[in-house]
Structure formats: structure tokens, C-alpha cells
Length: 159
Image (cartoon, rainbow, N blue to C red; front, side, top):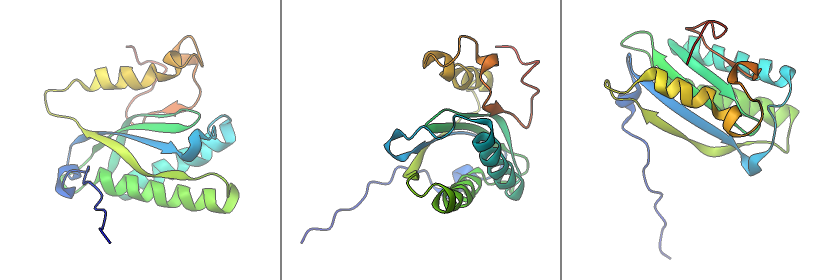
């Protein structure tokens, strides 16, 4: 029997260590619309903040769409690890889902993009913040409630 080898799609782990900006997108299986109320958002925001703190990372932006999340993270020190932060977020939030919403789970993996030094962080932030507008959930990204940043006051943030 021929063994199927899964294609490697993640960079080497050292590419996620240090003061590097990385965009992550994580989706729920079957596009389940979980992030549609403040209680759920706040619970998962706590998981995210715990994982950021554990691995010395900050979030330029985090945004919870109904069936997926967008995070734009950066390490605070040379030892920070945003990939480990994402794995930890996946683990603790997945366990919560298992206990509290057994029919809901994350997809097996997530997407990431390590930003090059010449890439515009604000451009990526704008793209993420405009996601609810593109999906016709709100007309102005400022009105979308399920977002945050550990670096910016989004009330004062301008695109």
C-alpha cells in the first residue's frame, strides 16, 4: 500500500521566533458560525491573550469573523515565538470547544504568512479590519465588535 505523505506547508520553526510579524488565519470546521456573540468572543479573546503572554507576543490586530479568526502577531523579544503561541491558542480553545461545544471544532491546521521587513503592517491591518465589511456584516469596520489589539487603541486607529 502506498503511503500518502502530506505536503509540508509551514516554514521552519525558527522563522517564527523573534521580533517578526506573522499573519495567521484559523478556520472552524464546516464554516460553523461560532463567533457571533460577545460572550464567546470574550472567552476566545482570553485564550488568545493568554497564549500571547505565554510566548511573549503582541497582536497588531485580532479579528473574529463568524467562522474564522485573523491574527497579525509580532514577537516582543528575540525569544518570542508566535507559532508556539498559535499552537497554544489552538490547544486551549480547542479543548474548550470539546467541553462546551462538542459539535464545533477547528480545522486541522491554519494559514500563516511571515511578513517580510519591507511589507506594510498597516496594509495588512487594513485588510483584516475590512474583512467584516467585505462580508457585508457591517458598513464600517469600526462598528464590528469582535476585534482588538494589544498594541493599538482601535477607537483612535485610522486606515
